[in-house]
Image (cartoon, rainbow, N blue to C red; front, top):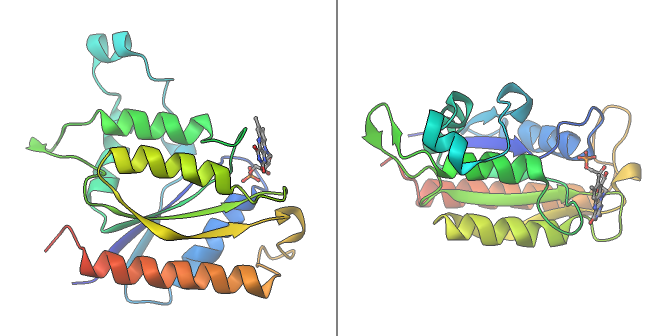
Length: 194
Ligand SMILES: Cc1cc2nc3c(=O)[nH]c(=O)nc-3n(C[C@H](O)[C@H](O)[C@H](O)COP(=O)(O)O)c2cc1C
């Protein structure tokens, strides 16, 4: 069976370097036999997590839809900036809400448990977002995901893409290719869907 891989950018910004990097990953993965899709968090707006809101109204439908999409995947590629050396609130909030989903279509589900996750980050800075990826790693491991050690970091991302949004640096491109290849291999071998 073909593997399902979801790409999740952690930025909504028009002109986002991470969205460009996600598009590059999408192009690479689309050349394989895997089924590739992308989730744009702009399509699933969510309030900031609040336990009282959850008690009163339950988990919002958009969180359930995100969890449902994640639960259907063998692999997830998160492509996210770092904010103040950590996870951007957009991404953390979506993960927090999705982690509260217990059932999809009446069946018990743990959307992140056993999910193979690859991480990538682009930043105009000299760390390329690697500290943020460490923070994402901790969160996803706590949720039972199989977070791969290999990652892709694009530093000086303001100079890293051409006008068509393609990576200009061969080292960065090779790193993304290697990450995508490893993600696919690992997702195939650890598939949660038989
Ligand atoms: C609140 C905030 C905090 C930031 N902190 C960091 C940081 O710790 N390290 C870093 O490399 N860039 C940091 N940046 C700069 C982002 O890397 C930059 O805005 C980047 O373009 C965001 O990703 P995007 O292009 O995908 O939207 C920060 C930006 C914001 C708005």
